[in-house]
Structures are given as C-alpha cells and as structure tokens.
Image (cartoon, rainbow, N blue to C red):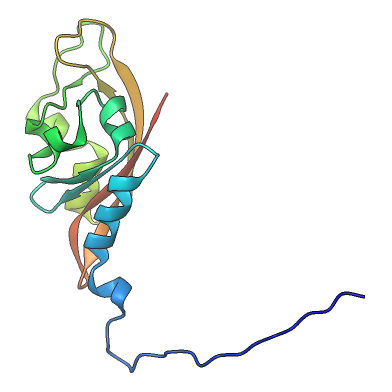
Length: 152
C-alpha cells in the first residue's frame, strides 16, 4: 500500500492593490527569458529597440550574434525583409509596419504572419519565417512586443 504525506505551509497573499513581483517587472522577466531561450524569439520595447533576442532567433533571422542586435532599432539592426515576389524587393516602410512584432506593438493585440528574411549579401530565395507576436504589458499599458519564430 502506498503512503502519502501532505504538508501544509502558510501562503503569502499580497494585500489588494499590491503588485506581485511578477507584475512589477514583467518586461524585465521576459527580457531575461528571451535572452536564455533555446527557441527563436525576440523582445522589442515601445520604441522598437531590440531588448532581447535568443541566439537561435539571431541565426534564423540572419542577424549574427545577439550582442550585435540588442540596443538597436529592429529594422536598423540588420534585419533584411523582402517581399514574396520573384524579384525579392526589400519591404517598404508601409509594409514593414505590418510585420507581427510591430503590429502587436501598435495594435495591442496578437499578430501573426509570414516573413521572408534574407541575410546580408545573400542573393538566394531567403528564409520564410512564421512569426507570432503578443504585446507585453507593464502597468497596464503596452511596453513592447514578444515574438516567437519558426522556419516554414
């Protein structure tokens, strides 16, 4: 016959209106998580500056090393997005505003879409990436966006 012991301990319950540690530094926790993640992911702030990116995210997006990208605006840090036509032209500013990380940031809602990424000096077809983004909230307002990627 199996023997099970149960131990009860006092539970910390914050008073109403007191932010928990998790809520008080939500953006910082995501930054740490993304930096150490094995999955390709990216965290940008409200000004579209890359705050954290995983090594696998850098590799998938042809960006080099995370330290080369962190602290730079997403679209000025070497990310080269091209359209899905045979010509593979770089996306216009109007089109880049619709990519999932920026759409989630500006709309405050989930966003998903396909991106075609081309590495620097690469004339090949590029890599097609599925991107799923969610806004990251701090004190009830959008402070950035978190994006997970997968190769298609």
